[in-house]
Length: 222
Image (cartoon, rainbow, N blue to C red; front, side, top):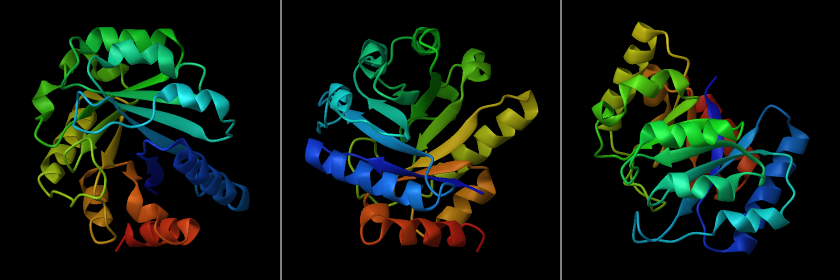
């Protein structure tokens, strides 16, 4: 079963709190429905958009596992900001990352799980093959990173398939996450290519959250 991860991209701390509360409510009703939430962090440099700073999570207590998706200049410099704020995984975009090895080392030294993310136009070959064994997750963008509400780009399917082939060939343990524009008619496509989890933002929160998650789960095998 694909894991459905609610994603929150906002510059409004009240919106963040409201959406986290919704996720916690669903978790309390059905323990298996939501396990983690992705918090999107954009610094205004990586993309022409800016979200909350991770430090605001210090005032929020949550039972949910949190993924921090860093769409920032030099993600390594943001790692310490995320530690102690409920982070389970820290995932950095590689496009403005000087060293994938150093980023992974920094995150793992904190005891947290680590992931690398590639933007829509970034080929899989840009991932350092030497670090794939050290990753918990590889996130592939199926829209241009930095903004929500975009249309799913089917070009991502070949990248997912390639990553699945690489981990099967090399017996690497990383999970594959698709992020961006996922709709009910596309979730089955990404599953068939090898995705383990999908991050969904606006579409998941529009209407009833629990009902929407169940709809996506049902659509996975259609």
